Image 1 (tube, rainbow, N blue to C red):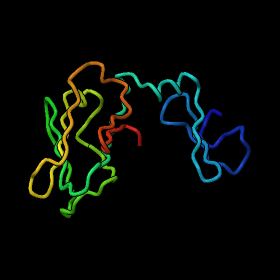
Image 2 (image 1 turned 135 degrees about the horizontal axis):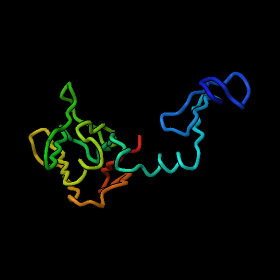
Image 3 (image 1 turned 60 degrees about the vertical axis):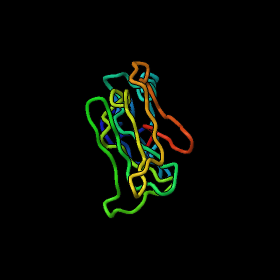
Length: 147
């Protein structure tokens, strides 16, 4: 196909070019399917530093967490529910302050309770090999770039 909504799959399906060059997305049976060249598949699975994924998520691993604090070598940030409610174990939050793999290097995440007590903390070394990361698990806590 050379334009959106052209296909070799027949009629009645939605089609579009994918977000990554070399991919086509097909909507079939209530799901989006991605068809990719081998080069595009490699680019999606193993992004280069220029194409790094920039969304990271944290799965809360304990009850009683009021806020998450992020400390990076050149910035800081955090997360707290707007209504002040506690985060739930298993809840997944977007760490919007992290902007790619470079922010992971030297990152310290601290989970604080209602009275400011430290419930959990973890640090990622400030080392070059933290590229290509997909997830880090520590106790019941997980940091991942997988949506």
